[in-house]
Image 1 (cartoon, rainbow, N blue to C red):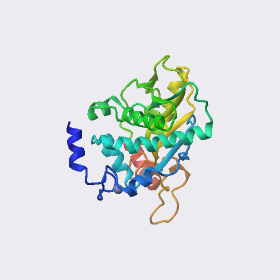
Image 2 (cartoon, rainbow, N blue to C red; image 1 turned 120 degrees about the horizontal axis):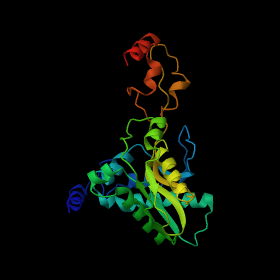
Image 3 (cartoon, rainbow, N blue to C red; image 1 turned 30 degrees about the vertical axis):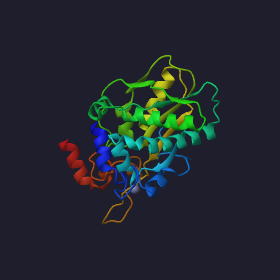
Image 4 (cartoon, rainbow, N blue to C red; image 1 turned 90 degrees about the horizontal axis):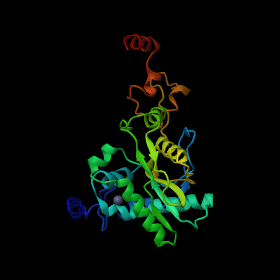
Length: 271
Ligand SMILES: [Zn+2]
């Protein structure tokens, strides 16, 4: 009921850009979600990543729109986000050519237990169900299949680099044995480093299910490695791998390359 009330109060504003809108999103933000699906690869591409298709960049108004759906309970965003995810699934199917006689299973990447508790619902599950509904309306025999669950609590991945995310998530999911037959596609809202898709695929393979790929609404763009200010030299190859996600002030990130060697030595001794 609270979510309905929030929808009512916010109805006149676009959840993405906050501009005037007759629905949950304005025409411009809807157009971003209506872009053609494309193959997306993070840099660096982690080993074990399935083929991933996406429709949009996690930039501009999209982070706000996805947060409104996931964190602030704006369920009216499920249809447009579900349509976008469905388009990414179709892009994947067009590339892989998987036979769909036994149906298509959209398997949501699990959220952490704490996120589900905080939100009071499984936003990822709702998104998968919305995408499955959109696909069925287009004649694709799709349904949501909750085959994955978290096995343990993981640290919040915000601010973690690619390697740290992978270590944080290793062994974090388990797949249900058995389950319905059909072609398995992993679905999620956003791909950042790809670590959660790698772990989700690993868990499915361990249970004998082979996903044909993954589909997401949006992917983060790779940030350029930071350059050294005064010296004007680039920050060197060691800084590059985590440059996708680590903010420059993050202590474990690429900022290490910017610290003069003498200070680095001191802080190593201190730590
Ligand atoms: Zn908008």
